[in-house]
Image (cartoon, rainbow, N blue to C red; front, side, top):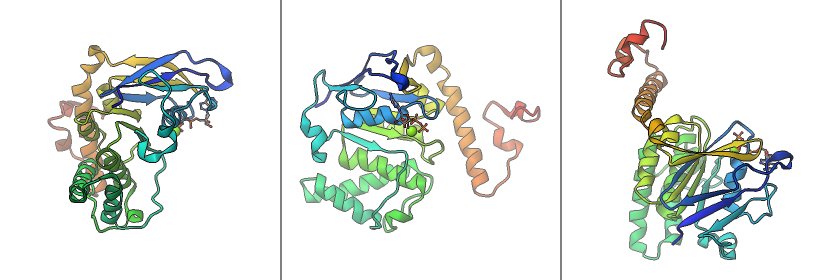
Length: 271
Ligand SMILES: Nc1ncnc2c1ncn2[C@@H]1O[C@H](COP(=O)(O)OP(=O)(O)OP(=O)(O)O)[C@@H](O)[C@H]1O
Ligand SMILES: [Mg+2]
């Protein structure tokens, strides 16, 4: 059972040593990685996934429970405690969703009776993250971007059930991030999320700030910032509803802004 993952700093681009020399990620932590495009967020995620030992361009070292991780973590996919969902996800397999999930569950689960439960649970999990329910008979290659990411997150969480999940996010990936966090929090994992979504940032225990390839800062979400959480959630829910209305070909009216505590602003052109 893993308790802590440690990132020991290396260098950013132009070989400048990273300002932050050590970060400990503890079981149950939810962590965001933030920073401009090209600042090194994906590279950091990859270092974690590779269990870098000073042997990647960043010179970072990853420890597990304070020591060098066993070679099996790197060499044997069945022993790797990390699931990585990358920025660009395309399925190469055109199997129907349920065949893919059953095959995967069959490899991971020792009890065949358990396989059907795992498949059902995975689809249920995925469908809580996407606005467009996944039909288990549809082919993997036919899924939308949002459905694909939702299915991968669910697969990593329920079937792989690795203690560490890394999610390299694209903006507007079409998944319900707040719901994803809520479900992941129930499972006690280390969850690392590349995102600039303020709602997720405020729900995270801390965020890692990247610039020019290096880690420049770690910001803990303190109570002052956390207190904005309710307002941010309300704004986010409102925007989600507006997006859904537009998506379905509807038109916005004053009504849409009622109950958001913002109705007065609509006529003043602020919204
Ligand atoms: N510490 C480093 N040393 C050397 N090169 C680095 C370092 N960190 C990142 N790079 C390089 O910089 C480039 C951009 O990094 P990366 O793709 O990780 O950025 P990103 O923050 O994920 O960008 P985006 O927001 O567009 O996804 C890559 O080519 C990567 O190899
Ligand atoms: Mg990236």
